Length: 456
Image 1 (cartoon, rainbow, N blue to C red):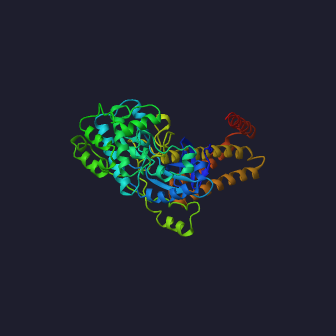
Image 2: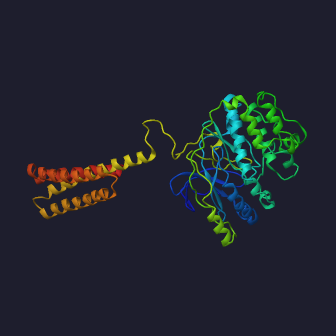
Image 3: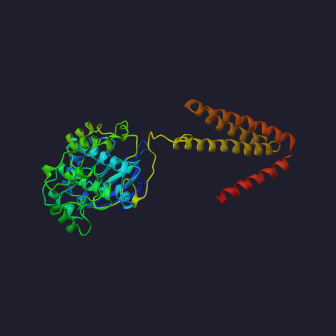
């Protein structure tokens, strides 16, 4: 797609490309309030499928109701126009797939992962959403806690024209047997995917092996999973999730209850859910009626954006998104995040920079005006007076703005001090130095300033 960085899309400003997959290209962006978000711009072949877009528009309203500390909430969407897009919070961290590539997840890390994924599925299923493509690449680890991304998108875009254009709806080895056999995917399919994901994380190898997708899919349908090396406290739970019969698998609440009863999980300190805030309403979908658009606006205040960082989308079948590109750790400003003691916030740094530039401007221009006015004092007194008056007026206006804003009185004091200092310097230079000396000094200053400007 190649959308250039810095371009605006709706109310969002795109910063950099995070990755791409079968459904769209993901960009790091800023929302109107300056927060980092992830914007997924759907590929043209997806945007051309009006049926898929209409289904996705309906699903987005449901997906926005999914909230939780282990969920990457959908914040905004626009299915209208030539470039439909989805917006989600942006998460700092690494995809679980990159973590597993460096070694199996063990100890408390595995317990946190299991509990977080189970809690995420409880939240997703409570909103009548099915993830359908839960796998290590769609789990982002941030500060040791898992965040699930891309829930519900595969189901919403499951249409003939989309899949015929190359999008991969799911990954063999994590897809449940009933999905591979063409049966509709229900919540039980997500429990199978969770079991396969945790087994891969606990052992460092896929539970159904590697190889061509057809071979892996055959093992899923006809063979038992390889759970050798899974800790004893977790193995029975994963075996239940990986049963071939969907009705024999536990539900997400049952799995969560079983994990909470496990002493290793109960000993973990689970962080409280961060506070929520209102988000932008979902925009009208392509082809939607005015009544549907109004309903979307009415329900648009639902959903949440927490104060922690959030996950961008990661496409089924690969493509970098929220947690990092090719396993790299990403970092971003997170509203409300606690900073180390003594480290200023980005706003404080910008304010300090503005104060430094303002101080240099007041002092530098004051020195130059005083020297120029003192030089012209005897031969051209009118010019001298004009220079002093123009400087005084400009700085006085700046001081008045600072006083009116009532948020930077130090700036007004500096402006008034600059005026007084300039007038005093003008009087001293005019009294103790000749016009020729002042002219030579002024010429030297102008040449030095010009050389600096040209050099920079």
